Image (cartoon, rainbow, N blue to C red; front, side, top):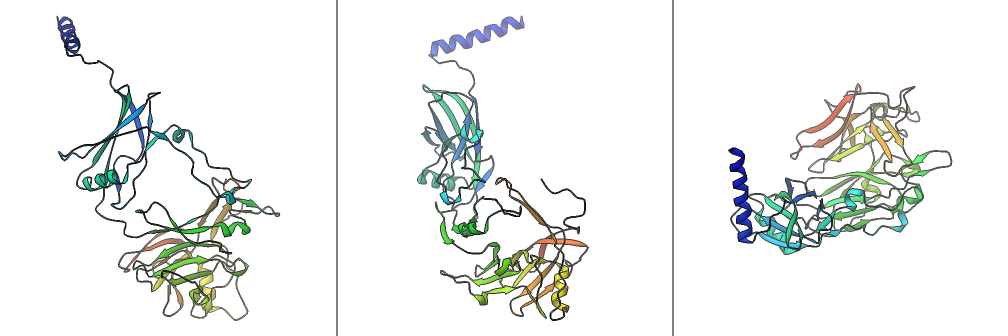
Length: 388
């Protein structure tokens, strides 16, 4: 009896569909949205993102994009041909026999894309602060929806508020005549380019290039007035650092460069010092990781006599451009540098030579530091296999 009732119900539904002229079809197949991730929160000033998705139905002619804000207001709707991704321009100077031109991986090669126009994206950002916006992508075939995927995103009320300073570094490992591998050959250091980019701008601005020496880890004071940056000096000296005042046009001069100083002179030896240095929020101090032995040398050394400190870093370079280097400290203490006194001193509570203390970051008000600590070890213990 139950089976008969089920058949009658199904039959009535089928008859109703025929009478009304509706087309009965299977539920839409799945669309996988790769970007943005569900729950993403965008800054309010960011430029339109590129939505990426993969459709499980082959031969879809186009896609419908609907954005619903759940506020009872109108849904934003548009269509997209779902253009494929393309590789952008590359710098031909950075092509070598130890790397290869970029190419799309299988997932991205399969992806379709859509970027909202400026007006649409502004509307999305304004209406997705209080509640998420649900973006539905529907694959169309002759007017029928054959596939569908959804993702929800929001816009933050907090702006980024500052541009991003970064550098472009070529992936060009090199092997010298002695069999030593370098992440970047000395003659290619000039290809490193420093850029500035606001998330509200479509392009970055080139600030610095053609440097004959390497500059690396950097930070800014919270007030935006001071730049601190590692700087390699003559004879590949790793113990130099620059503190320079920010201005529309900057010139870093000798007086802006320090060789990590202490009360009785600079830190001596070839060991890299000043690892992951951070400028304080007010620009008056710098905290950094140094070799405890080198710090002792600087404070107690006898003129003309230098005790060479051991290396506190594990370093392994590779010829595979996809994974160039392993580099981290296994020993080291935190020290703080005062611009007013030009002194580098151990930081109480973070200067135990039995531990490695690194990665210090200032609190916004400059009253405390957060850092990582672990048991100290030899960087290259005898008999230990090298990293692969």
